[in-house]
Length: 103
Image (cartoon, rainbow, N blue to C red; front, side):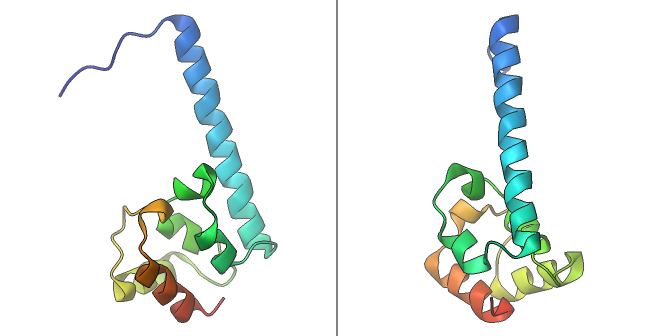
């Protein structure tokens, strides 16, 4: 495995700040899902990097009434791998998720 390029302390600090900002944006989006201000269909059709980098299982677990067990069961029935991210879903998978969860 190749070693990552050496970064200056300033570059490292910038990268860490950018990563923290991205995590905070994803957490805020998941909170909006949990509160119901964003629907599953809106989330699946959102083309922003914030939503695209989110894992599907994390997205589903953020929905009201969907826990870890139900999220994994739905993903298994639809045929979505555990490590799949939202940006990697196809149109049929998105439609199947919407049919399963009816939201």
